[in-house]
Image (cartoon, rainbow, N blue to C red; front, side):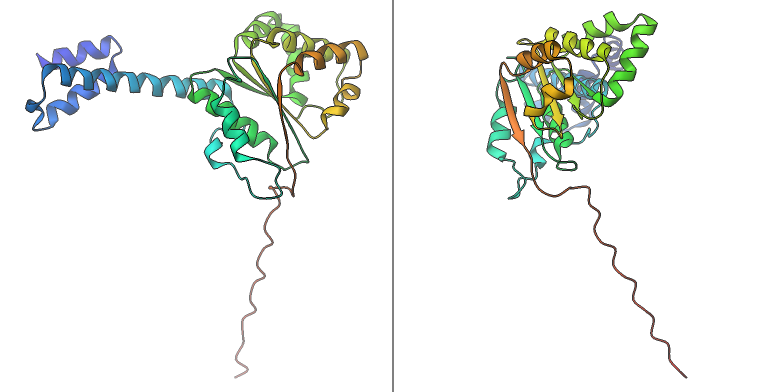
Length: 254
């Protein structure tokens, strides 16, 4: 009868509850627990299992550049321009549900993309959806989606995503169609969904990079409504350590 019960639980996709029941059957001494206590343990196991599956699905769909980045591992050494308390306060706050923007600027290799991915990863851990996009590649992707007729559907998907990461903003030039598409993407999210933008360019130079004054005004007006800024500093974290010179072998003259 127990085998049938376990099979039925898995048919109902209650895998966490089934695994918890198997563990209870294998343990001795659980007879001291009441039915209500054992049931509460089984339900708790199912809830945790569902949360784990949801997190795995959210992280998979996010396609984060640094999937293992976590705010707990932030490098807040002096000279990096990162205040750990400020980052933690943001991550634990309501910036996602309130639809705030996070603007991360700094030189190449300063850790902008890592910080953006860490914030997005923590948002996923809180049950929010996220998508990572590199702006230099976005231009070609937009062109393909327009050609295939899938742009409208994809735009709707982005509008429903809780956190959108736009990495390497301001790198390279953009054409008129991309400018218009960026405005559509930002406009759908303004005040409703959170957006993280990383850029080597200071925010003051974004208007010139966008190019078209009218579109630039519209995009920046929406991005700047409610924003949090991080300006990273310091040397590139990608710099390789100098290789240790090989020791010369001493040769015995004899």
